[in-house]
Image 1: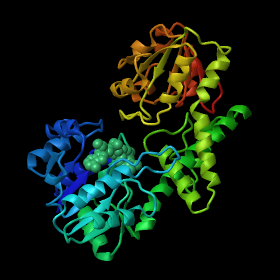
Image 2: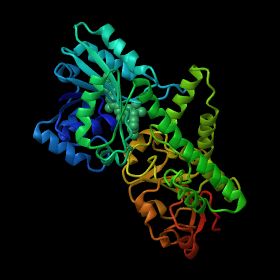
Image 3: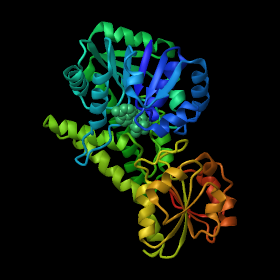
Image 4: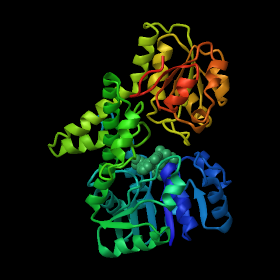
Length: 435
Ligand code: NAD
C-alpha cells in the first residue's frame, strides 16, 4: 500500500517507520523542515530504542521517505494517517487545531479515493467531523473514507510496543474500510479489535483514564500506608497477584506525567461534561495526581524546617519517565521551579533529556548527564525519574559524594533492606522513612 503519515512526532514517526518495515511504501510529512532534514539523513528526532536502525534500513530499501511538502506526499497515497498533536486547551478540552489543519492539507492535495486514518487521540465525534471537513474543502471528486485507529504505544518502548502490541483497534465506517486496515496491519500479527468509530475513539480515552486511575489509586493507598505504618510495595504485591487486579500500574510514586495521561484525563472530563455527565471519579484521579507531584516538596520542607535557602540539590531525572527525552508534564517541571523559588541551587541530571529541559527550565539551574557529577557536595538528592543508572547505583555513592547523604526518592528506586545497610537518610513514597 502507498501510505502517507502526517506528523512525525513520537506516534507518527514510529507508525510510519513500522509501516515501512512491514512492506508498505510510506511518505512521512511534517511541517517542521528541520525534523524532515534530520530524518531524511536517517537521524532520529526523538529518542526511542531501536528506531534509528529501522529508519536507516527503510530509507535504504526505498520504502520510507520524508518531506515537509504535503503536495509531495499526499496525491499518490491510498491511505493517509493523521498523527499530529492534540494538546490540552486552557479549558482542559483537546485542541483539534492541528488535526483540522491536517484535514485541510489532505483536502488540498488528494487526487484519488482515499482512506483517512486518525491515529491522534481525539474526542468522540472528531473522525466524522474531519471527514466532513475534507469533503467540504476538496476540489476533486474523490471518495473519502474515515477510520479511527488510536495509538497505544508507550514512549521509551514505542518500537517494541508497535511490533508486539496487545491489540490494534480499528473503528471504521464500513466493513470494507475496516478490512483494508486489517490487511494493512496483518503483518504485525497483533489481535485486531474491529469496532464502530465512536467506540474506537472512546477506547483510547477510557484506556488512559483507567490506567491513570490505577496510578492515583495506589498513590492514595501509599499516602495512607505512610500514616498507618504499612509498606505500599507489600500492599501492591499482595493486591496484584489477584488476577482480577493485576500487578501493572500499581507502583506508587510522585504521579503520572507525559504527553498523554494528563491531557487525556482532562479531555475526558470535558467530553463527559459536554454530555451533562459529571465524571467525579476521574476528577478525583486528576486531583490526587496534582497533589502527588508536590508530595516530595512537603517531605523536603518538613525535613529542613521550611528552609532550603542556599542548599545544593541534586535532582536525578528530568524526563517524565525513563528511556525517553520527553519532558511534557514531567513532575520535574513542577518540583524544580519550586526548589529554585525557595532559594535552592539545583543541579539536574538526566542521561538524554537535558537539551529538551534547557528549553523549558532555562539557565537558573545546572545540568549534567553524569549522575555522579550531580551528587558531588549536594545537601540532599531528589529522585524524579527511575533511570536505570540511578536504580542500579551502589548506595554507598550517596555518602561518598554528597555533603550529607539525604535522599528523597519519588520513585521508590531502592530496596529498603539495602537502604538500611547504607548510611543514608532516605524518604520514599508509601514506605517507612529510613532516617
Ligand atoms: P508530537 O507533538 O510529538 O508530534 C506531532 C507532529 O506533527 C510534530 O512533529 C508537528 O510538527 C507535526 N505536525 C503538526 N501539524 C502538522 C501538519 N498539518 N502537517 C504535517 N505535520 C504536522 O505528538 P505525539 O506525541 O506524536 O502525539 C500525536 C498524537 O498521538 C496525539 O494525539 C497524542 O495524544 C497521541 N498519542 C501519543 C502517544 C505518545 O506516547 N506520545 C501515545 C499514544 C497516542
